[in-house]
Length: 137
Length: 137
Length: 137
Length: 137
Image (tube, rainbow over all chains, first blue to last red; front, side, top):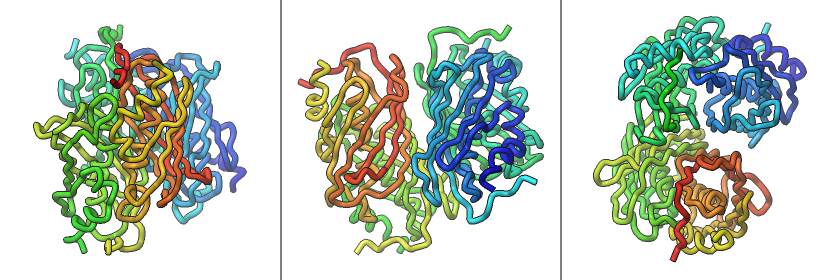
């Protein structure tokens, strides 16, 4: 199932898909999701809304922690906003493990723009259930 | 301007509007935003995506910290996921101040469903700029 | 064992005892720990060190989440510093549940001084093990 | 003043000194603090108390963000506990910048033991005041 996690999540996570987030890489140690910032992602300050950035990071986390095929859901996250993302920026969220614990994995994500500038930093903890990931069919 | 913050943000925060989030109450000490969970909010596990919950909480925070008319943006958030929200749930995010600091306000949000069940708990810190909030025109 | 959790933790948590933290109240829904700020708690800025405030909050959390007698340890915390605590302040940390989950409880703590002023706000998550709390003998 | 930050903080941060924390390296891009775990650091579970780990990380953060000589204090932290530290472990906390922002710097710390095992992961945000660091005299 591992090799299909990317397409399963890209198809079944409807909120992420609507937000334009797409998992582009995933293996046992990292996952990458991308999102192009459009007018639909902007907030009242004309920069990318924090919830859109959070969603992008969350998608990368979900890909990484579920890669082994055991259902894992998020229990907490911390996000630090560093720079604004602007319309037409191409954002890349890369998730790596802080600790690939068998029960409570923790993950770190950096969201950067097309120039490599850090937009936000996210950490997250998940909880692994003793059941396999739904196949998404 | 204060009395218009609700309509300004509901109009100008396009990501929140697309996600179905709407500010329904705001004054100097609290703000409430609502969102009905639809199929478009679901993730691969068929529950409301964390990014949708974060967005809802963020909208309530933005309303509260910007109510006084001084531009304030988020610098960090922490979110604890307690229960899943399901399709057709009506979610309510209520934001109150932890500390209404003139420079770095901090806020606490509880997101609950139509039965009053806690879905997630969010804290956030903002940074007040020495400029007024854009009027949204 | 529940009725003894207070004296067990006050005796066995040597770091907290050395830091002058003492659990003064605990039941199924809240716990309170106190600490008098002395010269030994100060940092380079002559205010109470953040680690001392964290320790005080942590002691209240430990009392609350372990009250039922099932071993529970902390997995994460978030702390927001609101005001400085000064030498000779008497600090009180009150912990209540965000969610008294059977596996991953989450807790909120407010640390206030003798005037009721908020010094810091802490949230925390724990993990309950399927074993009883050591009796501290 | 920069070259003295290490000795100033080691002398003036009395809580950290009492806890056995010592800054051993600091420059513009990283800082390292160390602590040997003794019986005085243990909690009721006979492992290093979370507040002691937090204090160690906080000392490394303080060294890093104050290195340039501009007074910077902590406004928030997030800590993820990964493994227990035991009596006689030698812990090393290394702080690096997430973003060396002129107003609100953010920092990441990994605390490891003598075998390089990760004990906890900490992030933090500070606020730079427009005044120099006190000289500690």
